[in-house]
Length: 562
Image (cartoon, rainbow, N blue to C red; front, side):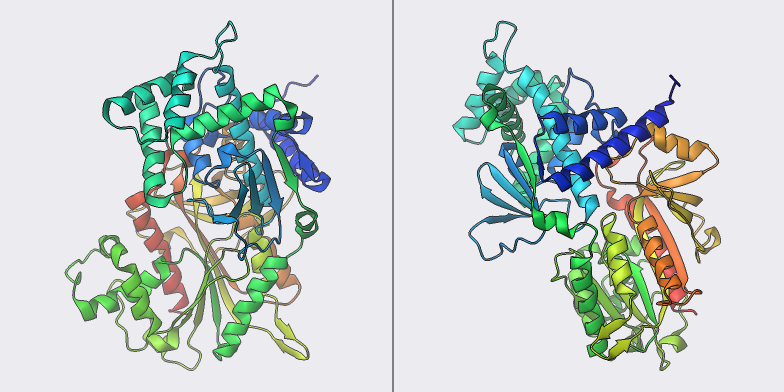
């Protein structure tokens, strides 16, 4: 039998996970502890995602990975034995509790203490995301369960103490808290300080955002649920995929509604015949880049700060005031009502004639004073394969009865965060091509951005960007292969290849011009090849301000100088 390299084995495992997940969604259900669930678990263990750290070590529980997962699943998931993935259950007017995780835009409903419903509106990427996190929790719960009993089969003192602490329901403080953390560290196989760090992280989120239960409750819930499952098969966890979800996969139901709303808003504003520039970005950097300085000229709060990026660092707590100012100078907000979780902003630059731009911005004001002043559409980040659906629907001409309107799309800019391979957090990557991992789909990008467009104070890497299946479906060996072979990849993300697939299709179909300007720029949020710099190590904080605003500035200068 041919010996496979580590990267080949990992790629097979990723493919197996995807294939199994696709099959289960069509089948309609699976049990994580059953044969299908074990197939998913073997695949996940096979490519051992960097984000899940020491998941494969049976002697310890993975804490940073747990933090990452808990932030992206609904509060109380550790107690659920019946998990339902559905597409179009409108439960806003029911008595069910609606829950949105802290760091993932998805809607969930708690049906009862043991039952949770996920409303999937973002396609297969969201399904993979949920299933990888659930599989991770299943692996970790198995480790916990093995430490509930000692070698003689008796429940350990540590577990009885944890149970007492949880069932007591009172907030632990001082010495009592220290003892509880020490006891928990014995169960988890981690040091006191490692356990304390995760406890404090989750406790902060619990108190500030009500996004999770405490670490004690999470560990107790995972272990008790697994123990009850082993005692009685009727307690087995079951994950269901509803018929409505299976029918929705591959269709653009939510994206179609979303795009129609945006087009009708542009038409109602009389902007349908003006040059349109689409930017996929966050919901604050473009607004702040255009309007913050003008707002500051009226309030004179920060006008003595000369450095552009230090200036943007200081205005973050005034974003709401800046937005209100922007609304009177061309900003129209289009909040999502479709379920895509993608809000939009329309910027009519003809209404910016009176505002003053920061001195470091190179903008030709004659462009915004002309009859063809650009219209900028800023759309919030899509999620994985959802990027194809929303972009594909957005750039299709508007059609209603005998009315057909083809928008004049002059540029499409994708500003996102990505994992970097040769650099570090805060660096910038420019795509020359997107390679969809695990498929034969590769897209060359005629990127209108180049290294010389950017300030030399930030490292800029130019090359291939790999579009991966999910943040939890990354493997060090596969990524190293992409970086060190003739692919010469510089980064990885989840949406770029899907956006480019939609753009190429639109050019072929005649929906947009072949010479449309395409711009892809990413700032590095993590380095999955570097220990301590994966996404599980935490958010960027101030590190992300400079590259984010540098990219925003370059894209806006391209639009407002052409």
